Amino acid sequence: AQSVAQPEDQVNVAEGNPLTVKCTYSVSGNPYLFWYVQYPNRGLQFLLKYITGDNLVKGSYGFEAEFNKSQTSFHLKKPSALVSDSALYFCAVRITTSGTYKYIFGTGTRLKVLA
Amino acid sequence: NAGVTQTPKFQVLKTGQSMTLQCAQDMNHEYMSWYRQDPGMGLRLIHYSVGAGITDQGEVPNGYNVSRSTTEDFPLRLLSAAPSQTSVYFCAILDRGKGYTFGSGTRLTVV
Figure 1 (tube, each protein chain N blue to C red):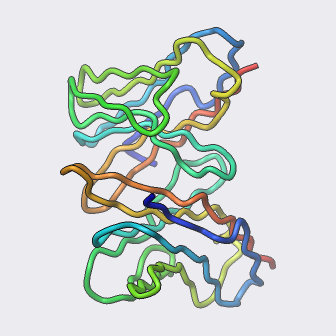
Figure 2 (cartoon, rainbow over the protein chains, first blue to last red):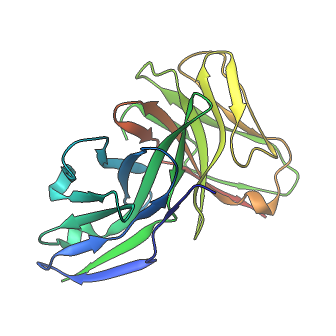
Figure 3 (cartoon, rainbow over the protein chains, first blue to last red):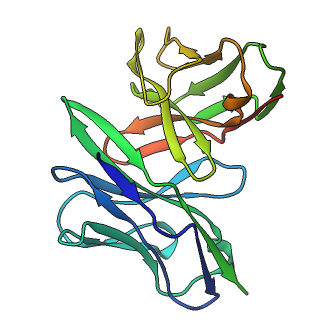
């Protein structure tokens, strides 16, 4: 079965430290990869995507993600965390099946940045 | 979450009641969808629509109906609410280049 895994339910990091939120996927073909962020009582917001090209993708709010094809991973990173980065982060993949697009979301990782 | 408007933001229903969750968009996108978000389960697709008059089932369609009479509106109907339908519901439009834009959600509790 095609799936997206976010192995950590929660990640704690001190403000100013680098952060990584992990995502691995198991799908056929060459998927599009996405990261979304959800703040309390809000819908998910697009952060960044990878389609092709450079393995390091830059997105909103200083976030970036590294695509690793051999490890089928797409980890979200930020060099210096802010308290305001505390939120729920979702990884997603877009696959094409029977000529239509299908999105598969991970279960989410809660990031807590400590002052 | 400009562009996708969901109402109501909160709702409490009794088991067996019916209701409609409203979703409207002003971005003229063909593709709209409804997801439910539950702790530890991520987002699960309920129904989606690729244009006015066209709807299809997602991963968890049972207990829900949809219709798409216009490009702008995509209401989700709960026919007979059950406690298992307690969840946060998100409507979303899809830009194929960017991905989804989500509404701010409806938090539904069925007692």
